[in-house]
Image (cartoon, rainbow, N blue to C red; front, side, top):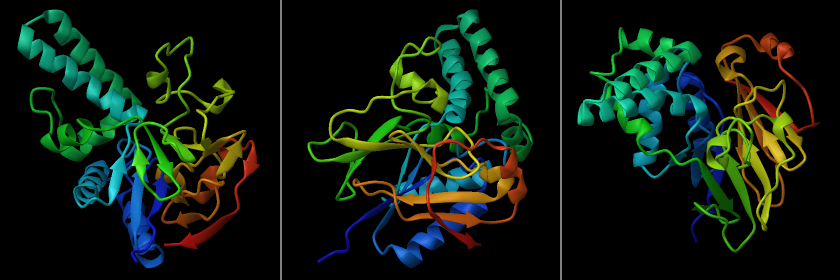
Length: 269
């Protein structure tokens, strides 16, 4: 009989390829049949966005990872999408929107990717990033067997998105846009029948917490060196591991603390 599959969530990496590799090594040592579920925001701000993307694509090609879209991936995608429309139509408005999208991304953290590449233009957008950005779902559901679904299954499951459950908001009327952007204060959030809780990154927190039925895992890895790994269990969040790599753990003191702290095992890597 094969080992049951352990799906574990890895939140916002932001260029910390070293912590991603440490997460894979931990999984190899502790979960014989593991599958990594990344919450998005693998790029920007940190030192090795391209290495993160390369490794995540390798894991996905091996059937070892599912990669979700974060708001930083959405920003990175905006310029190339509009630029392709300009190429296809010659419409100068599409070019204006493409440049606006590129600048939006650069201001939000994309400048670190440009520096890694030694330059970045819409005309020669990196094929590696284009491949990564082209196929990122925004929401999945994980059942008790570790199967990943695009819609809530008949059995109990956990919802996983980058920022929040889908909810129409004054700034994001489309709920599937809101899943990339909303914060805990934008709740309360409702979950579909059979979904026991939801898991998110996006909002940096001092420690991993649960507020209502939402779990927030982004520990500001690119600054603090702390990365949360949460194996998913439909009966509730448990088994949290926090990897501590190079960084400034004291930077966590400036992050918000709210909700109920999740018990965690802290490991130096």
